[in-house]
Structure formats: structure tokens, C-alpha cells
Image (cartoon, rainbow, N blue to C red):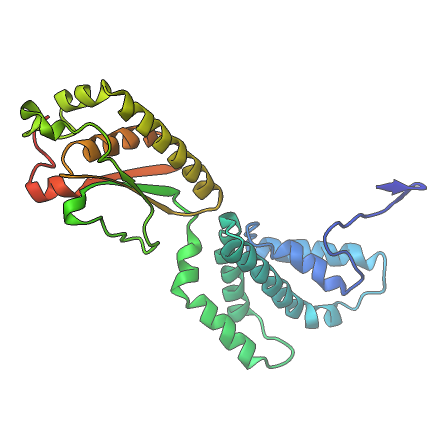
Length: 278
């Protein structure tokens, strides 16, 4: 801003007096900026040329400690990325971690610090070797919603994502096509069964509440950067109502931005009916 014709700077984060090295290190080694080394050097030279017009600058003394401040800045940024990403569940911060690790690799290969810091450098090397951190190199692929149908007589599906499970909806309160002779050999994927369940008001009320709950969780999970949501529908035989509801939910979610839908009918798989003609 201008005050009395002179430029003034407002810093709403952590503005305070400090070493001149730190701000230029913050700019040139910003994670997602991902500047190539040659451009970094050009900009640093330009900065030092401009700075020389304001103060008596000893370039040698400046450069002797410059890369130590680069390390300080990267460590500060990594701490912020980790806290905001891992603890506050804001996944977009984690996308900057691989860039910071890339900068650390460049420093390790090209820079000699003015003092020996073996413990710190060993810790940074361990971070670069971490499978968990390396796997953050690609942005999150989005939310995978895994939809299951099952029979309560044979137990609920296992959660292979390691999240401990998700929604389980009990469809046994709904009208059961399996009690009708003409539907006994069919499944919830067959048109006749679909038409039968579509005519039942209670089915629509049940499904509407399911969709409301799942939609809210999908929106929340995506905002928080979660990658998996599990939704299971159970009925007595795992052949009609649960299959119908799983297919209805999957159809509802397909096409949603950032959402991948996977469907499994565990009882139909056991019966060899998963790919039966419709």
C-alpha cells in the first residue's frame, strides 16, 4: 500500500524483521512453483543485484549462509504441509510434499552447508526414503465408493480398505420379491424384480433416505480428501432387495465428479449369478 507516497508492505502471516536470505529462499524454493535450478539462480542473481542498490552487500557472505536458510524454509513448509494435510485432513497440502522432497534431493546433491549437520541430514534422507511420502507424489485420485449387496445369513462384507467399514443398510423391512414364485430364480438386477420393487412406496422412502445420507458423506469425504467410502445393503438371501438397492445407489453416484463407483454382489458371486443374463 502507499502511505505518504511511499510503498508499505502488509504481511498478515508472520511478518517480522529477519535475515534477508529467508524471503528470497521462500520465493525461489516454494514447493509447487517447482522452478528449475537455472531459473532460480537467475532470479537470485537479479535479487542480489537489486539489493546491492539499497545496502552494502557482501555477496560471498550472503551466499555462505543462503542455503542454510533454504533448508530452514523447506523444513518449516514441510511441517505446515504435514500438519494441515495429515492432521487437519486438508489433502491439497499433501500435494506439495513431493515438491519439497524434490528440493531437498537437489540440495543434498548440490550444496555443502557451512557446518556439519549429520543428524538433520540423516532425518531428511529418511523422509525421502519413506514409501508413504513418496506415494503422495500424485494428487489424490478422488473418492472410491464401494457398494456391496450381501446376505445377512452369510455375514457382512469385509472392508479391504482398512477403514473399518462404512454404512450398512438393512433391507429386510422392505417387501421381499423372493417370496413370490415368479421372482425366486431372478435377482435384483432383473427387470421384473426392478419393476416390482419400483411399485412399492416403502422402497422409494427407504432409498430416498439412503441417498440423502450417502450424498452428504460423499460431499464431506471429498472435501476432506478421503479416498474410500463403503456402503453395504443386506437382506435375507442377498439376491433381490439388497442387489436392487446397491444397483440403484451405484447408478445414482455414477458420473459424479471425482467419484469412482465399484459394485459387488457377494451372494450372487457365491451363487454364480453375478453375470447371469438380465
